Image (cartoon, rainbow, N blue to C red; front, side):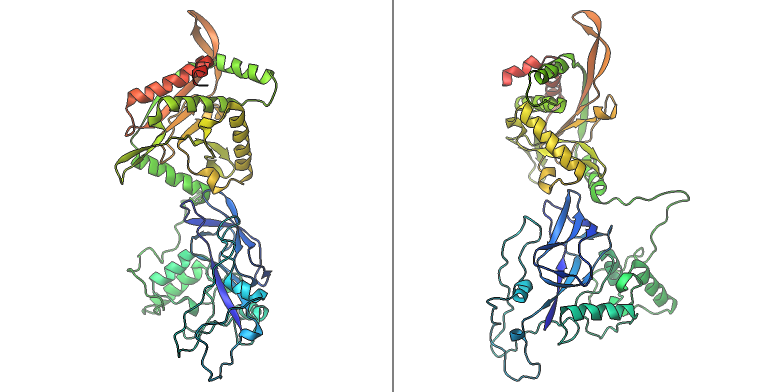
Length: 482
């Protein structure tokens, strides 16, 4: 007998609650092996391939490419065939044993239990055996069949596809294995809140997929007949929302609506939370960067790997944070405490085709300019290709934002919540400057510091920024900390 197992979008860690389907790696009817990647998803942190912990035949997929699903929503269903020795005669009067006998070998048995892995490189290498407890004298629970008692995995997939293709309407009393194919959990919630049983609908999408339009049409038809929709088998826990059945809002004439999701949605949430929760202030200063540029030229002329400008600025940041550790902290409002870190995980803003991301250089305070240059290059390339991992994008304690690459002089950065400060660096351009009592053309840069006023006052913030400017103007100041 075959089992239809539902695989849900796993918890991707790092506080992520949803993911967007970028590319399906399997089709309905494909045979998949245990831990085979089945879908590529994009989270607010990175692109990852999600492996399926079951082996068998794919009977349904939930969500088209571009659909955003919350953690715990169904991804796909897999029909898993059980060995012949596991089958039970439905008419047998022999009571079932007190516990199902474990299989010592066999691919099907391994597929049914799953691997325990939810992401490549995550989870356990082997899942613990899961058995349903059977009380003495009680028959053993039977596994749900894919379509019939004699149908194998391939037959069950074909049966499902055939029923959908023929446009058959399922009655609510019919037993249907697996979840109802719905394009989005939002559509499922819309039906639940309005008491509509999705098993009564025939989807107009590919392979009978139920779309939002199908649910809205059914609700309008029920309202037109002046009767409530059929109650769902799943009780709803709140009153139907008056906006739930309304069609999606349309943009004004000539307008374009862009969903806030993925990286863009994560950036919007973080920045809005920062403005809402952090009482920030900004101070800035112009600095003569001529000597810093000369020092970098001399370093690179001496041979060895080239040193980047952002690496030198990062080295200056870590030296400044050692003097003013109040800015390398976060505020825990629940405990009403300021948490000061003894390490510097330095984030840096990077603009990519997917949007703004902030990769993190771990333990930046322990790296020299050459090591910082290499790590910045690695993370920048990973950001460009979309291969950053969630670990590369989380855990920052201070951020360096070099917006000078966009050709602008100054900015008031928004703090990367939950950090306490961000240093902004404008473009370095020739400007008139008084040097050694005479007017000269020097390489000038504007530095700005946005800080959380809860962790320090203006004196500390000004001292930090002045030290950074001194190091930019006279790189030899750094020798004191080396």
